[in-house]
Image (cartoon, rainbow, N blue to C red; front, top):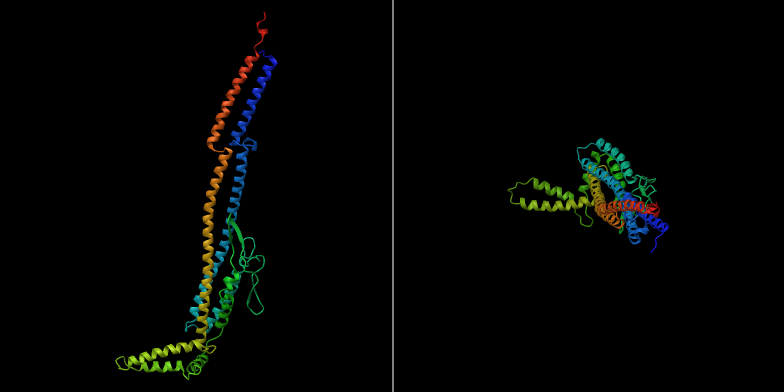
Length: 376
């Protein structure tokens, strides 16, 4: 077969151009530290890598959502912590106010202080997050949830919904709490309780009222029974106090007095004390104490729920980080981004450069072969 000079040049040029193109592509791959630069390099791997990249992006969005959810829940938790401290203070006030040594002036000062506390609690109920949304308004996050009505009460303007965020592929999480359930739920209303405390502590206790209440207690009669349990108990107790422990009838009187005490306690609970008496004050304070305990229980339940959700977010974050590592590794495998892939690319580039250098030398040598060199 006869090879013309033109064919030799054309063939060598094609080979050199192909090798230069391969070197250029390898150089781009080495620079990018990635084998698959275009979908045409490996269509299947490129398609799978695209799907995995989208999944990884969703995983990152869920992470952002979890951060936002945790921030919102932390706002709620912080407000509830402040509310818990306030309830503890109110309970302490109730206990202190029941001390008979407390003066009317001291109770009046306490009532004034609780007025300020009421405004503080109203502020907790209308707390906002970093974006200005009311955290206890349900779905009506732009509406102030609690407002004072004309009679001194507090009206709830929100709804019973809860704001949610998608924190994982299969999990939507509540990031707020029902304001009405916390501040006015379970048959209790913290605003009403505090208002009643203010009114009760503002009423002075007088000796006249105490005397009137003692008379009313002695004359309190169970309907249709013709009995006066409180007066009967006082009589029984006075009889017992006048007896000596070695009296043969002491034990019998002791038992009778104990039975009378039970009846007197029941009667005391059934009757309405005279306003302005120590008994009336104690009765109201006992009711406030029960109400505060009930409200505190509801707040504790809400805090436990929020704590459980925050713990779940921590677990989802940990799982999300594992998924992120898996997605990244899979994408690296599909696109050839691993250290071993880069080493292989560098090796191929060096080899191709050696081939090109050798081919260029062969071309120069071959192109120099001509019969003209042998003519003399």
